[in-house]
Image (cartoon, rainbow, N blue to C red):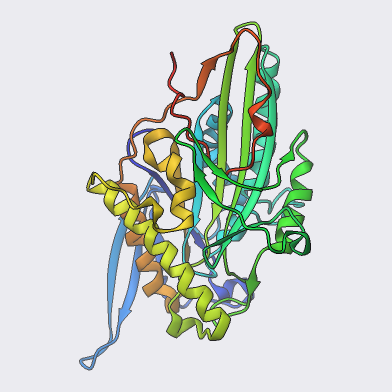
Length: 377
């Protein structure tokens, strides 16, 4: 979990398979290696001299094929998720073209034991691990926020839009942490609490139909769980956070067929994704200046990307031939991310004062934490 950014690839079934059509006679666009770490993408190149097929090979920390289950994917990232309860700032984000299965991977059907995604499984897993630590003398307070970045504006997905009208959320860097003002925080005391949060967020998130996806997410969403742990006997306090980002899909305007408001949304989505790519490019080059301030998204994830926390990327891929050019772009970006060094993560642990002040969880919400006093003393 240290060194380069960990990247997991997941291939979704083809649209024909989703519709129950037979695809056995077609050549596979994406072939997953038997080692569960490599894949080959075949892209058709059209030219006046005739069409040719070119293959591109990639390798990642793990590759999941079209038949992979939600449980198998979560098993791969569960240890990463668990480290938030040990006092680390953790960021997990899904990336890929629109319609590639990002929201299914991150959320899925949270009422289904089979189809629930990473967010509900993470809450359940942390609750179980929390019980183990509590038997060792720890006490925990868990709180959650859920926001979306829509057209470079932040919206609170846990607040009724009618009540939030006119409310502007700002990102502030207090030099010790990133804060988003005015976000509603919900205390999480049981695994079942996640259902209420997800239902509310789903009803408020910006979704619209495009030529590429009938239910295309038009925003980036960020679910964050804040963890405050206390061991009174040891007089120790730990603070961790788990940010799970479902990024809006990258898409070509010519293919998605968007116009008007949808066009503006697409332009803002692509711009923020480009800013994310610029950050990874600067990190790869070990540049003195990292352009985190170029978008709301990169401002929010800065604490985990800046060598303070842990980062994991899930690149979601369509297995359809018509989507191969977009899949190639996603794979090239994911390969670039996989080579990025983010430094060794630091655990946020400190000694409690003789008289403990009020809990930090009473502060305004923020999607990630970066406490510069976090190094163990």
